[in-house]
Length: 256
Length: 373
Image (cartoon, each protein chain N blue to C red):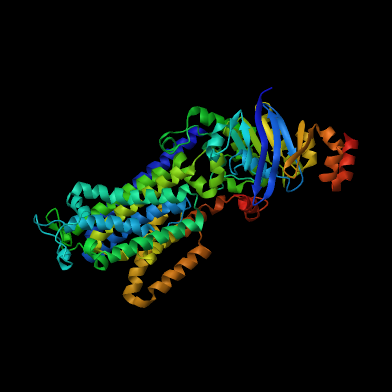
């Protein structure tokens, strides 16, 4: 099958500390992959290095077969990688609709933005996305007025507006209520129909809701990969990551 | 629903257009008939300063980049026009001050300024090129926030010291006096010339307003706000903010250059004092008082602060600086959106959106966003 993302012996070190250590990771086109791991496992660094925010010390990242080394963030984004941050990052001073419109823009250089008016397709896309993320009723509200969960959904909408091939989503349900978590989960599953998605998450309940294939990171390398059930049965995973929550995990197992 | 909104937008634009024309007509024809010449001259100067405020609002209020160096662009525009006036001499003669320093040949960079079209171009282009170059170096290296402000202020000091020290090139500290020079055969300090400058200032102010209005509306304007709100996010959405910031800084510089030229001829002199740190900070205060991110606020703030200064200085010359400092403190602490922002909130107070949890609490997650930024 087609590989959308490959990392080859990827190492990132900050002053000798190896946030990522000889990381080998592959992901198929169209896959929904969840990456879990304890704090400090290098999950966010992993996203940083894919999106060009951090350069690999050694090794490489291949996106659709293309080495991303040295390409600036905005170029990588235009190649088709969209990123959602851990805390929602939207433009607070703009309305929901304006937030989406800005990302929809197909021509992102200075003069096109200045002289072109939003095309019909752009406007239709914004309308469609408002529906998808369920913010149609709040489209003319400043993003600053949205709740935390609504901001999360707006940012996911902005991600989709970019029409990326690969979505990187960092802890989308941190700090959300159960109901909002459900919403975000359903949204991600719907998006997975047409996108490759890589989700980083802590919330095991949520991982169970969306996960098909799970990768466990530990100390900057892949500890193991498999389905949720395989992961939960793996001794090493229980030791390094789930140690303290073993009891909860066991109950979770019984339920399923 | 869409069409209705669009219709509403058009109507608003029409009202704005009518208001601008009305204010312009009053300023251009009614005021000169009412005010004595001295007061009119003051108003002309203040309107000139309001132009530079528009430029500052563009770069600071909308794009979030606090420039403390706009005195550079302001003075460059002023020097440009002053040099042109100084060169209105019989051929072969040099401006008087050159002879004091034993210079007998016109420096090369003075020569093109004898042409009026070149001077007009230079007033706009030189400040914008300086701004673009400075901006490119700063923004390409992703220097942001307070470091940008410090760098602009440092640049201002460099220019200030350079102009101060170059007697043989531009008369150093003494500056260039324009009031006794001629433009198109009329003495620049005469009433008729001053009236013409006043009218031209009004035209330029309106043009600058329309330019800023255009830039800050539509996608480009929203992009500026996005740069202010979260520049890193913009990069991950596929935009390169550098080009946008350079362009806006250059436009802002050009506007300041025009303002400087108009202010110079209405004041009658340009000296390196225009590049003093305090003056550039004062420009920022005008915008803060009027209201950041509202173009009308920039203009109103300038006129109010300047008039307050005039009145207070006439009565109690020594208290002005204290008053200005206090005013700034007051605005920052009590009216963070300035006077226009305050009025706007008041008027829309009835429609105020109530959210639960309160907005103040919800701001927090976004603030943390920079932990990785």
